[in-house]
Length: 450
View 1 (cartoon, rainbow, N blue to C red):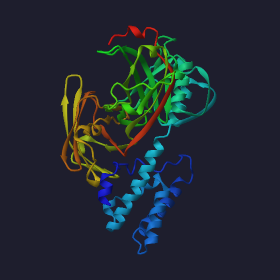
View 2 (view 1 turned 90 degrees about the vertical axis):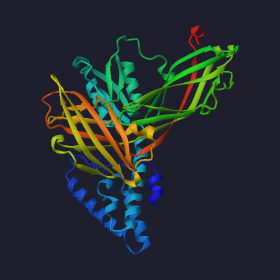
View 3 (view 1 turned 90 degrees about the horizontal axis):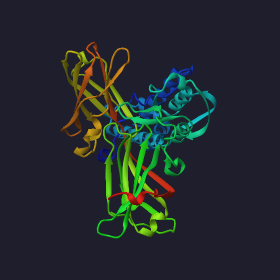
View 4 (view 1 turned 120 degrees about the horizontal axis):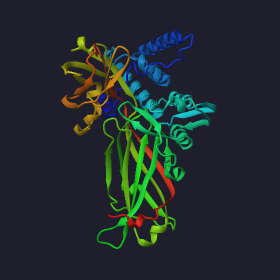
């Protein structure tokens, strides 16, 4: 069973990150937490019962209690027996898998009435868990009242409705996992044909950015080239987009199926450090008579995501060298810190070592960058300094990875900062399906050059 667990998707969800989410105004929250802990302790004891039926029922009950149990399960290696250790691992794995599936649903927004734009955006952020950055919008604009009618509206549809009605646009800031809003430079510059050229699937937004045709070299035919743009809700951490050309189909208005230019192509596109969106292009063979057609394109993609992140914090870098923090199935050691003072700023180099249960994450060496791109420093007032320099990984041994960070241009007065590493958690593959209808080449498409 332990071998099976090792080959299963990474399960690094934290014991503290997945804590019981109870309302701050709930008067019995402490009592409820104590009751749950007592129930969990009893069920863990039953995992070592002499009767098989009792053991199986206890394991099933722990799984059914769901995500709040994760903060109350002991580390598997501290279990009294090997059978209990394996049972705890199975419980954690099943709960984490379900949590991953739940996180892949679109965030839903419900808000009706007249509110200040700032209030609307704050509500969208609160209800979705997506951070929205409003610092580029003036207070006059933010305080302007608008009418909204959101009734379980998916996140991306709510955002698109807002930017259609308001003179706003946005970009995703991967460095701090936020959607950054600003005023549109031209009121009429909103993306055209938004209803026809945007498709939504769960937490993903797929848009057609460009259609054009160009001559096919060595032939009298042409190529239809379509550029797509995939965005992910900022709360999620996408890693790779993969697709096969044969899984994306294009049909003309005369019901003619177009042939992909590279039918056997299979691609994997990394989103890079902090990336939240990615472009890809598909091409089909097109004859001259079909250039005036409308096109129907449908297809399937797959996105690998780290569906949650695990914050691991060292409170005082000056006094934490050699300290080890364990959260759930991951241990992090703060190896060393080097400080370089410059005339107007300072640089800190922080090196950590990560080790994982189950023999470590099963990633190829070229993918180890996913471990080192999420880290920040924080001063005593809570101001964050996100990683702005180089970062590197080294495979030190089975299940252990070394990571180094360079924080540059820090204020000289920054003393005793906290360091937080955001570990990737359960890696899962999410299917993406899309369907665009009535797409048409622009009139000047024939002027496009190969």
